[in-house]
Image 1 (cartoon, helix red, strand yellow):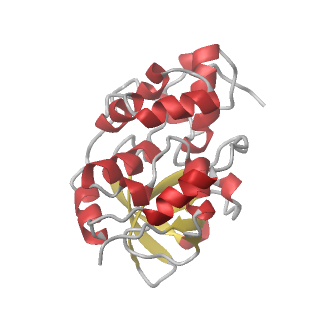
Image 2 (cartoon, rainbow, N blue to C red):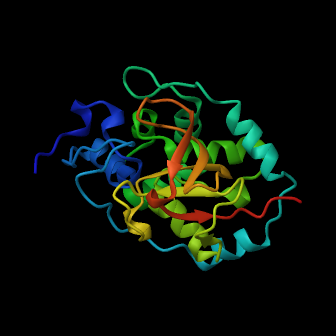
Length: 228
C-alpha cells in the first residue's frame, strides 16, 4: 500500500480519524497512508489513550446554559467557510492550534502546534462551535475523532439514536466500532427515511456544509447535555 509524507500532500487527503497520527508524522517525518475526509481511508486509525476519571467527572458535573437549537444555529452560520489551497486558513484550525487542548494532544500524540494549522479539521470545527457557544464542557474538544467519541462513551453519553444537536460520528465503510470512526459533525434532524441532516466541517469540498447522510454510515452519536 502506498504511503505519503504529510508535508508533500494537501491536508484534505488526510482523514479526520488519522489526525492523531498525522500530527505526529507531520512533525517527525513519519509516513502515513493517505485518505480523504469524505472517502474511505486506506488504514484504520491508531489506538488512543483512555479518558481519565477526572475528565469523566468534569463532563458529568459541568452544566451549560446553551440549547441544542442555539448550537445548531451557530454552526449553520459557518456554512460556506472554506479552507485555503494548502488545506488550512480556517478559524477552527487556528483556534485549536493556540488552545490548551492542543498542548494536551501534543503531549499525547507528539508533534507541535503548527501541525494543526493545515490538518484535517472536522473535529476541530465541532470543538470550536462548542467553545464559541459556551457548550464546550458538554460537546468536548479534540482534533482526533476517535478520542472525541471515546470521551462521550466514557461519560455514558454515546448511543445510536439521532437527536438534534448530537455529535455524529461516521465510518464510510459502515464500521460500527469507535475505532472505525473517520469523520464527525452535528445532527440537525432525523429525516425519518434512513438519513440524517447534518452540519459538518472539512467535507470533501474543504468547507463547512449542510449534508444529508445515510444512517448506515453512522457509528454512533455523542449526546451533550444542553439546557432545556
